[in-house]
Amino acid sequence: MRAFFFDLRFLRAFLLGGALVLATAAPQAALAQTAGASREGPTGLVTPGGDTRRFPSIFGTASAFPSPGGTGFVGLNYVNPRGGISGEGSDGDFGAGYTIGNPVENVSLTFGLSITSLKDFGADGSLSLSAARALVVGERSLTFVGATASNLAAWGDARLNPEAYSIYVSRLSAIPLAGGELPIQLSVGYGDRITLSDDGLGRIDDGAFIGLGVGVSPNLSVSLSATETQLNAGIGFGIPEFPNLSIGMGVFDVTDNVERRQFSLSVSLGF
Image (cartoon, rainbow, N blue to C red; front, side):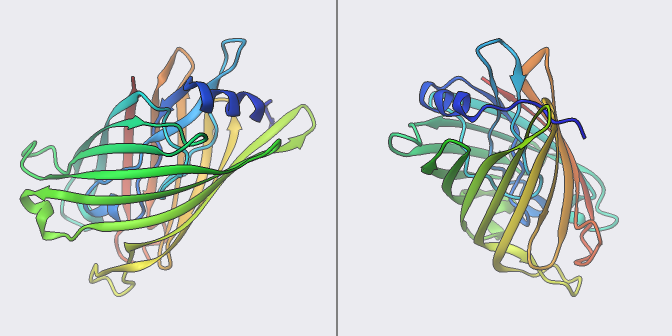
């Protein structure tokens, strides 16, 4: 594995100045298979030399690193099968959001909109609110705390699900290696409507989650995430010529332990 140079000094400066590259962060584990709720955020930066270097995203769990204040995003997510239920066919979700505030100086807030099906677009959906704050801004690591309230003011079939809440801590660090540094993001948290039952009945309960993402090149990361009952795996990548565009793909419930294995492909554009 060839490491690449990833200077956290640049990231701290961009967090203060709001010059981060917008890209897709992975949806919350259980919600991604039921309501398409997502937590968007930056996954990279533009260095003073003009190069795009994306810090590793995590597929299947939330990240506390927010988009810079005064920026927004739109995204599409394709899943097959819907809800991870065999025979349900494929579907998609639409998401959009806008971020205000500075997480280093005070608090960052992200207001989100989720349309939970593309087959009857606009008939089902909800709002979300996420908050993030820097805990530690060190020389070789950054640690943030975040919280999300989702399925707010739901309409259509989304009203069948209650509001959901989660809190999580994310740490970004860079491990020195010969010829560069290996960026790693670790996220751990707890929330309700996170853990799917392992009896195949699809019951959802509260529980803990964890995710680990590793940057294997300036524009590619690989990740694993897990709840108390399922394992997820995915990749996130970007196209250097389009720094505000990000693509992620992966599989929820890789081992089919909760009988909800599902393929997911997402595309996000920041502005």
